[in-house]
Length: 502
Ligand code: AMP
Image 1 (cartoon, helix red, strand yellow):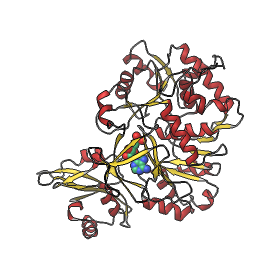
Image 2 (cartoon, protein in one colour; image 1 turned 60 degrees about the vertical axis):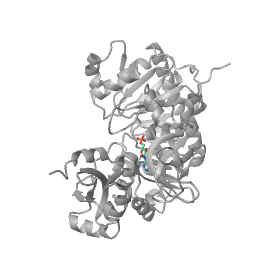
Image 3 (cartoon, helix red, strand yellow; image 1 turned 60 degrees about the horizontal axis):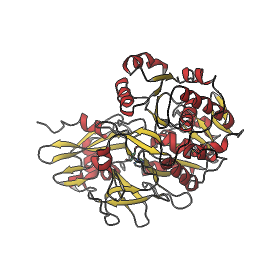
Image 4 (cartoon, helix red, strand yellow; image 1 turned 120 degrees about the horizontal axis):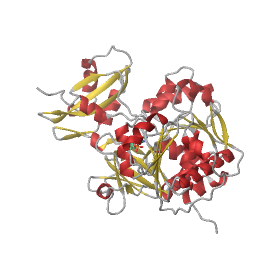
């Protein structure tokens, strides 16, 4: 009887002989059958380098077709894939290597020498550069093009993803074969993906969005991906005519909308635009619909839980909401004790389902603190749910501002500020204040420089309760964002922590 590898067999195996295209970009085209040969060669290489089932392969490399083969090969050879943000510094990298205990590390040639001198000699270092050169393929091309998948059960680990937390030590979220596969199966049905789909892929692949949501799904259905290194407006516009779907973070959509070439004729043939990883402004949703006649489908998920809610495919897509819990996902809005609260009230999203991760790598206490006794995971996202079941996220619990003992949810204030015509976007946060504990502060990006602090305050004066109105307004050029488009509130809090001193 042949052995089974839960995730690999379901996602990649069916396309083994397929002549269909999998990856398309400026470097050419790769069919599934070519891709499988490379997977097998890399899997043989990993085994030759001593990788045992369950061992971690840490990868910090620029996005490339080969990196997807490396991911699939790690799974097939029974390993645990550990992709790392390309922005991490050498000292951060050393932390991830030590914390994860990875025995094989794949990095860009540029940092090989530095890393060689700092990591344990028992660790194998391979290189993979942005142009796909490097020792991974140099060694792999001489390997056998056949490889029998190593047995892995649904509960075995498939990946570790360090969370993009902006404060404290990064935690490795451990994801099982079952966590990933169950989510892919649900998304296929929910978003109606078929093998005729061609996804415009401009996301990073060290993150759950670009790697699992996009890549697992397209490989699972046997579709194709236009696999571009990153978001580039000219490339996006050029390639869109060949795609049927796109997954993006909100900044992709705002950048597309800021270009007049992006219009109805460019998008008429597109079946679906999906957004996630950060909040999509209702205004962007509307502007997109006005321009293209199509409604962006917004969904919500996180590294730890994969995708958990989504606006529906056929039914109403409501701007400003992240839609309904996906099939198989139990979602409740709870108070800080985990008790479900009344519908319509704001609380913390808690989740349970096959999609939810197994815990944090070697952090039993953190894992314990993150789950309720009944198995629900405490996301830290504050939200409310309407009578139809649609979820609206209002912020992160740590973003909550408590001023004079009263709670202010930044999202509520931002929504009102963003309605001002000459304002592009805003981020509201708390700054230490000796009378109020914290004071509400708004960082605002203007469309032009005409608006003053007094005018903004005057506009807000009859729209928000006094305690919610910003005590201080700061005009800035851009909001600080990470690679996934998330506004870095911790950075703003740090930079403006002394605003009310003295
Ligand atoms: P990450 O683990 O990097 O994917 O980040 C997950 C976090 O991103 C969630 O906990 C949310 O705070 C945020 N997030 C993801 N999708 C959305 C969305 N559609 N709207 C608002 N926030 C989102």
